[in-house]
Image (cartoon, rainbow, N blue to C red):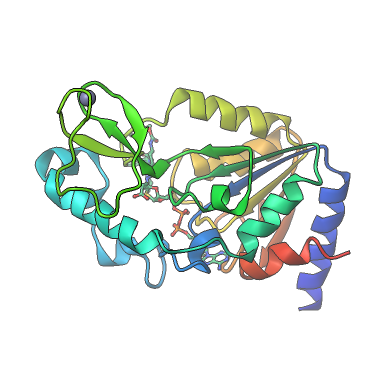
Length: 244
Ligand code: BJW
Ligand code: ZN
């Protein structure tokens, strides 16, 4: 515990000195809001098979099943609110000259908490994209029709998220790498570090000379690689970084 406090004090000092901060978040930051994580106890990929629900092949094979899964996630996430971890990041953004949240989450909770510069690596649950004309729009209906169709061309819509085997949007990747290559501090929060390319981003920041700090409930493959590793819940640790 004394060691945890020490690490928090070190990180607070680094934030105070930093001009450019990049943050990478994963499912763990939303866990305290009630959003299920993917791996670990109670994780979605313990209950469901990713290959049946989160690949383009799965969507071609059974679009109805995949939409059922995303409609269920919409119902689950719509009533949820950001937690003190999301709010603390939004506050830290106001204290640092350049601050970017790069998130793997599709839940939209960083925006709800007031974060302004957000890069959504894996898309957004609340946006839909046409499978034919590629038109993209926000759609907050809960639930959506079983097989929702495009207003412009009538073709099937898909969730605007990144499935396994799909490329991340190059413009989104550029925005993420710009933040990573320019930062002097990176915080990696609530991600297991198993999914590429996000998993390597902390190491890339370190190679570029940044200090990297992890905040996670459990150790990850990178805990020993980063400069600081704080073990605990992000909803409890992040607000403590704001204490004088
Ligand atoms: C707390 C906490 C609290 C809990 N406080 N902490 C070999 C074979 C095939 C493919 C590949 C391969 N090697 C690499 C690939 C590519 C693949 C990949 O990385 N696979 C690995 C699994 C091996 N990646 C891709 O396909 C990506 N595209 C790509 O690379 O394109 C190029 C390419 C194409 C084809 C082949 C090769 C390359 C796309 C990845 C898309 C991931 N999509 C998902 C679903 C998004 C939509 C949706 O939500 O439905 O994204 S999968 C899922 O995992 C989701 C997440 O964003 C992502 C990461 O998960 P995250 O956030 O880390 O969550 P968890 O649950 O894993 O961890 C939670 C953490 O929180 C834990 O550490 C807890 O301890 C912690 N925690 N409570 C603090 N209160
Ligand atoms: Zn269309």
